[in-house]
Image (cartoon, rainbow, N blue to C red; front, side, top):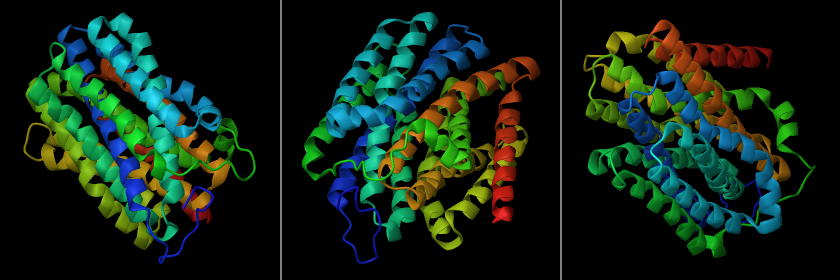
Length: 388
């Protein structure tokens, strides 16, 4: 089954081997990403870097996502998706090694940008492959499973900090090896991977923004939420007296919620539809943000952060499901690249904005920023549902 075949019936065979390879690639990629954000933020916090500057530094990687996204469809078409993914895995590993060797916030700015540029094609190409070969009748549950496993990879990243620490080369080697492993997995499963389809009307990343603006805003919301949590929650927790170990554990709990609730959300989407389920996730995220200041410091913060992780990342899972329902061919490739661009933009705007809010109104600027964003998404989604 190739990308040209995007409709299916429940009786269509599921290409499990190809999907396993794709999901494994993005899961390992997520390990490296899940480690990098809290690791670098904790190092900068330890050096006394202002929260606003930590947010700007964290925004460099998603800036690389946004800048590189429009070029991915062209590069994949000319050089092949597998070759591009393998090359980028090597370059991302080399960039992370350079970051480890230059413990300086200003030197990290361009290096974190390059990390985003090189890492982005791994995610875009893999998600396009997966959506292309997933039978439509099983798309919601499979994308939920995909998001769960990828989120599990993000969870392993912070967990590895508890084992490797946050000093020296040890934590960086975890990320470097993870990026290299991505390339090896792609190389191993190349014979089973589909060729990316370029059928249908030509669609650029820029033109896709006009086709699905609300869908892209949902991606922006999910991205900003996650980027703010993994890059600035360390600052939020420190302001409330938490230790580094407690902060890492809470971030891990947040990402564990991402991992463990996506399959359930996929099932819910099959029953109520992806659009309605997205409204539920946005409202639940808003409620969680309102409760966070009240629950922090008690045992209630653990189930709350866990649930926040699930419903906030669920917005992205449901966006992927909607993307597969609505688009095929070149539009699907452009859509995945546009998703990557919006993920990058979400990080670019989200982390610095939340960091600035925390400087202006105190540490509670973090849940305030997140709650405001989720509230806007919920209102826009409800409005769109009402018009239908």
